[in-house]
Image 1 (cartoon, rainbow, N blue to C red):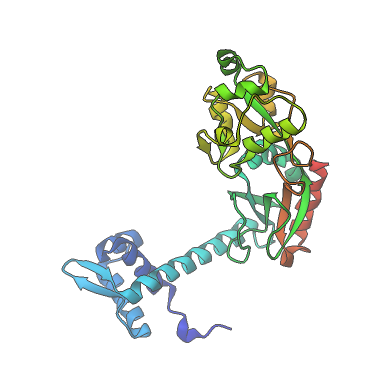
Image 2: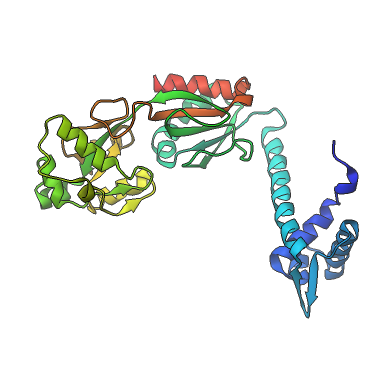
Length: 313
């Protein structure tokens, strides 16, 4: 239960936050469509309620006090949360038909979103929002109902539902292949190897897997295959490969369009698969749907889970 003593009027908080952000009463007044005297009065009211000064007045400027600096950050976060909650209830008409998803950028763009029309047809009452996240996070601190995760099925306080493994294939554009005469794995010693930031040892482990399978690697060593420009997302690496900047290891199911059109070609039959075998991932590395344990029985989460598992099958 909230104590009203500790809940200042929202108008006073808005005036304070705007003045803190602009370090100016006049600019805050312009933003809020109020007079300068009205904004000053609201800030004085807030300071009186708190029993402390939030600003130091320096000539024509206002400078946050130490307490004001800390309070401004907390007030801004609270106002953003309140605004988001209001937008959420307005967007759904109050019926709870909103699903907030955190997705891996390329997986979302290349695989998930093109299939969402089917989900929308089955659940027209549901609005799905997408945001990009590449690392695990605390669901208690982020406004998401579920997330798509690649890696081991470990996420604190959450349920991990297996979706699929992936096969990663070595690719480049046809012109780059012709230019360097890449025909066998050993020829990669002449190539620029495009690296993914989140999987820094992928090329090294792929070459090791080839060697274990009896494929001649031409003496490629681990330090050699760790060198090359790094990219944060698969989409960036794919575009770099299409542009002739080097050779890349990319999930086949995310590169279907490029492989079909011929803008990228598979260099060799050897693949990296997160299911095991000649692999650059552990057997547990896979795509997972993740949702907080507290949301496991939520109807929207269950509906999306069932639909997504059906798509993966």
